[in-house]
Image 1 (cartoon, rainbow, N blue to C red):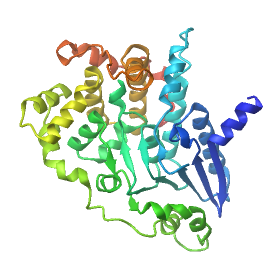
Image 2 (cartoon, rainbow, N blue to C red):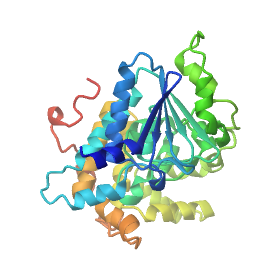
Image 3 (cartoon, one colour):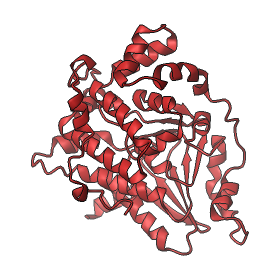
Image 4 (cartoon, helix red, strand yellow):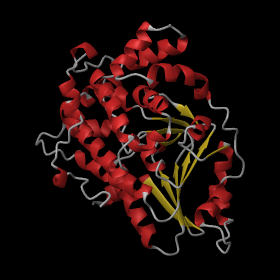
Length: 371
């Protein structure tokens, strides 16, 4: 790696050890800490260092700036990488392979990892945080898995970790990409504590106060150091809509039936907004997402990652991803030309195709996960 790229690479991830705690800061505040491939590799390196360093007792993940923990992968960079891949060697796929391996490692890491999810947390940011042993949100937190809006499926383990929610809430959040607040996150299992954002300004000072001679576990010591005060998790805005969500998403047999039910049912502000959100998404990927989320409820974490990688591979190489990113992020005309454009023209065989792995079992890039 040349000097210029090495410096950029190191600056995008800040790493320091404070009183036996490794503090990893995602450091792209102007990009809302979106993950580049080099950042994924760097965090993976840091994890391996911490795994073998006896003097490190735990890890804290946080985002630089005051707007976001992490908005996910760098979608524009990925789009440009795919578009420039004239050799068709699918070099872009390695980003997802490395990201999923990192996320899987976080779920199974031997030492406690703490995710400070202040501000926006989307996509890849959720992948980093949901495997952590301690997940802390604030009143400023907004969590979402909005991949369907760009012709993708919720990934980074979402088909596994979203099942902590009731099925109807999982489908609602996964299909619409709806944003959850900090209290929502605690109420529905995406976070362990909601604290005032001001409490996270002195993380280093709090970590310095940890007494490692105490008899508590490392996780509990970190919890006691970082969780000073909490907010009331009963004030979860999403709960006000739980009955409506259950009636539309709880009993539906497909994404198409959900959209039809919203269109034909009683028109309220909520139902209209929800229908409009779904109407902007790729019909094919809504149906794929519906099935993937339901399938994931009965699968292991490793199998969920393998399923997601297959879907992502097909979605980027032959699906709606490039068109979704073009319409929403690159050209910003907000007029994606989905294939097909409507549920009426969607063949069930196409949905099944996206859910079918492109690789034989022993040749899957993530075959080693869970072995």
